[in-house]
Image (tube, rainbow, N blue to C red; front, side, top):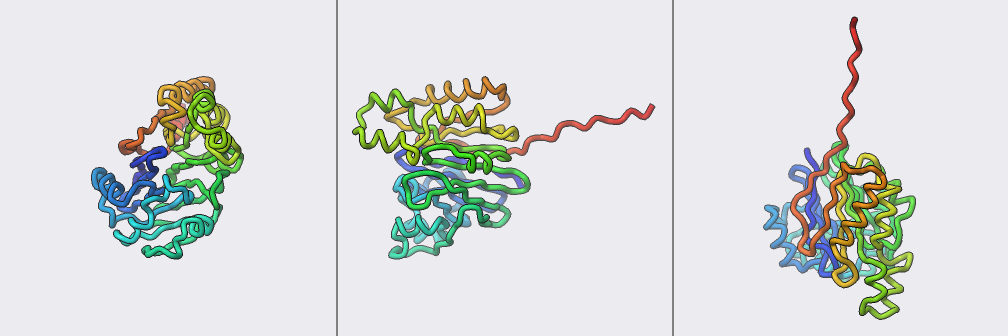
Length: 272
């Protein structure tokens, strides 16, 4: 049962990632409107009613905008932390249901196992995810101020990793944002810079990883070519030419397969 994923939207305009293994499907974040989520799912050949659940990383609108209305229309349960539930006010919403996630405690959706991982961000109780199926693992983390040991360890065995590469420090510093927002973005509970991601790729990326997807790229404070150059240089310093790098567009990506690292060939014993 192969594991694969497809980014449906990325950036401040809305974030959502579809993850699939066989007939089991989950949506990580629902930051697009209900109708747009439906259209993007259908363009990927997916019936909205076939989703097992929506997993929310946190309550900010670009990650949760369409969650309640999509849940209500298509009967899909939402899963997230208690902090996310309270911050979104979902107790007052008509939804198909809400299942509480706790960092470090796995959740199941058929053959998929989803492990929530605590991350530092200026939200109520934000989390990243490791999705696994039949020995294949996919790590998904957007909106975090720094990459700590907990996330590095959680992603160490992942065959594919999606992580934000939100801003270039010089572009942000010289850009139009007010200083209060610049300070928030660069803080320890803000967002990751290209340099933060480069350090992770050079020093923390697991040896099993063959696919890196860089997401949530700011359209005001970053540029895809700058993101790619920074990532390529970091991987080159580590000698990781086998790692494929995808930079997400706001409209998302095509399907990306999560392939487990092949076992090295076994040496045969000489009989004579």
